[in-house]
Length: 509
DNA sequence: AGCACA
Image (cartoon, rainbow, N blue to C red; front, side, top):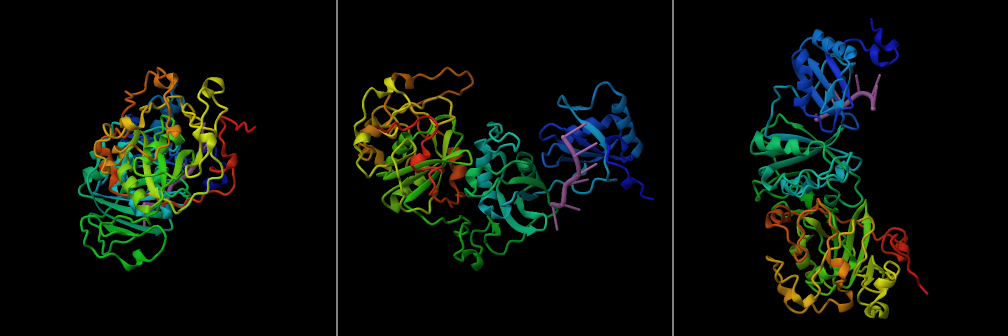
């Protein structure tokens, strides 16, 4: 008889089961920790962690019902609650009799991972995003974030070669959602990838702007070798660049244009979309202008916030310049130490409409007396209220700690020449003719000093793009940012007139 | 703080 269903779901009324349901677990509780917790009471034969919307629940299955009862009984009368990592864990009998699914303690780790992409727009995730080069980049620059702690970086110590080569990827859609099988050469690398990525959010910059956050859930697959017949938007074989490209993959549809090597070919544009990651320091319009001017005249820049991250559209007069800039700058950091890392993609825009020159958007093609002729001492007078007039070198992006990046004062002194080792384009040798002097972030006494923040890594201001090549190559391989951004016509969103951020009001006379 | 499928 099923008498269970008639009972209200109160916590102490669950009928015993050798499966225990745990909640309030610390983030990313591991199977090992679960086993540790249950081991004193019996043999843990199976676990399942990261359960539930918050992924802070888990199940423990004992070999014997009495062991489960022993654990429940113990903690029911113990003065010390069950704890994992010092956090109190709540136990109860599960309403299931066994843990279904993968993880047995003697789990079968394989070289193929089953990746479930959770999120409303999961199926919009490009296969390139899943590719290892990105994954490596993701890990190495520590931008994978916990769902609960969006801005918390994974250990930076997780470095470049954490995983091995991804051989193949297939993606498919089932009722459960969008999934992918990712094949590594061996179970070890697969395991390291799994451990590092399971439960993580795909960084925003890897996704189209309008894709909502996607979480990775990773288990082992039983497969050992995937069969990929075509390179397509659904499957890739990175071991065989000569594999024919599926015709279906080339059809003009949006984002999935493939190169033979599996690279996605974005339609090139004279307008670049820059996403700035790990923005520990303010990135101002002027900084962007200087950086991008190294490759040619920057016509327009529009900065805006997208999902809490800073993005910018940079317009060159021609596509070639944009290509050069993109290739040279992609993956580089504006500031040494991995700060303010640039991710570039081609915008769909070809001509930005800049409605007003302020600290977030500027049209450099229109001579603007107010811009060209800054009053020299406005900073001292009204630090914040002078925007829209000139460079305002000390303006900070809103919400960013006031670690003003120190930019070499003289444009011609070569922030590029000495500090940019492998830049393919020597355009910065000439005197950066594209940088109007007034727009250079000028040094003010206050800018030079580093607010003495203890924990900040060594900051070597003169190094722009000071990041190691390792990271670059890890990421440079491929591009994922698919830019579907529309410049919002409504002023609130970004480049419009009223987009003036909270740091100041245009005191227009 | 309240039960998971690929």
